[in-house]
Length: 296
Image 1: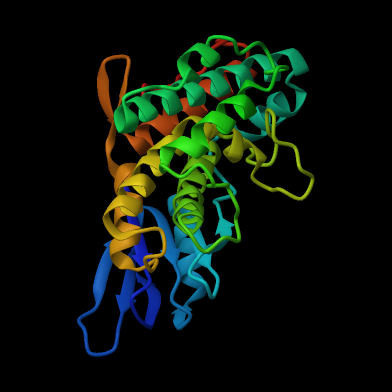
Image 2 (image 1 turned 180 degrees about the vertical axis):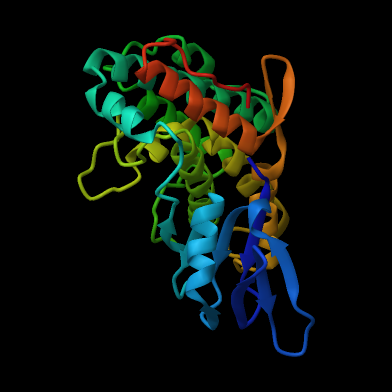
């Protein structure tokens, strides 16, 4: 898995492909060449960017994700590769046939990891976990007590030092930062899912019929606090109403190109997501019963 995120947001550009490289051409500047095999995700937010069909086909062939932004510079669309694994058909079948008890057990592992990570982040930022670590230990199969929501009610009023803060996709405050960071994380997670030969629409817990990326929304849960931490730093340094410019995006993407610890080993985010998705496939195939989750 490669680890390069390419963001096209600072001006008009023409994107094409030459010799398996993405070519970025801007007026008055030298062409930039980026091997397609090195790209994990391409995010395009400037309205005056032109693509050739070869760009879309080349990204899909290389296993990269494409994130397209709207006029507010916020992600509005996501394209993932269709072919991800040589045993994809078999894995699709096993994924679709997975029993409800298995799905519930796996979802509880994700919730527990997410709440623990939220608690660690609050400790780092405010010196106290506000009871989240204890809550994580109470998660049961399928999370019937909705510990995830209980944790959120404690987490959001504290993390930014704003008791009135609420998650609102349309809000013009730090929610814009969260939306952007989560969208990139979602793209990277979706890419790992496809590479593992799984279908991103068939979720463990998320199941909205209009959501084509339910499984990506499931698997990204434990990693959301990485984005939250970056947003908290941005709010402290620039305020919640700063523009979503190149500097802001770089700060949000930074944690997603960093390294995480898993079983005592330091690994890239892309490697961690790939291992998580592969472990999920193994669970569906009956080869293991636990997900390969990191210590974020």
